[in-house]
Image (tube, rainbow, N blue to C red; front, side, top):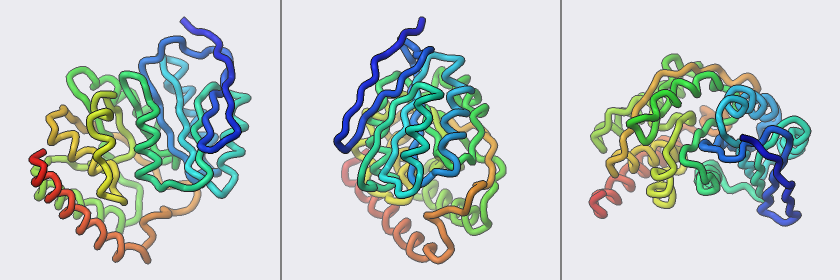
Length: 262
């Protein structure tokens, strides 16, 4: 059922290393993609938690996509090699969330890809809520029932999702949620086109996937407040600029899809 793998290392960026250990699945059916940028306070616990909850139970592998962190994240990720097997993709320069996640998705080769942000706001046990719904669906998205976030984030999210529903005719409550299970065929069809919404990669990915006819379902999940500092992207001082870019981005996406009749 399982086999050992040989360690593969490279000294050039972008860096790809396979850290190995006993108990590596021979034929995984699931990739677990965890992005990491300046997550020194959380990345060890997040990776270990997903390994313990998922990899020890079903044939799967963890992929950490490290995006040019300038804190201790790379060193902490490297220290994990003594504890669990995983694959590391690391960059010297930051790509940004959307490009980093998109490139990480392309690295996943299994039939199913589970994605979770690495800020420790999601619960690994909620993975099974998605996994048990995979039959008959191409993408299962977590819907945060009780968002443990600042009021400005909640208002922005509801307003943004309302606009998405009005423009694209979608009944999606939490289209930008960074906790989802995706069939590989959806990624292959959509990821290269997802390049307009800088601050809402997953919203655009969800819109494109749904309009292409893939079956999408939302399931309720738990959500915790970020334990180490607040959000870096949606700081109150950045909200006016973000709102403007989101509005112009949604309009650009709308006209792009209309032009190409997607």
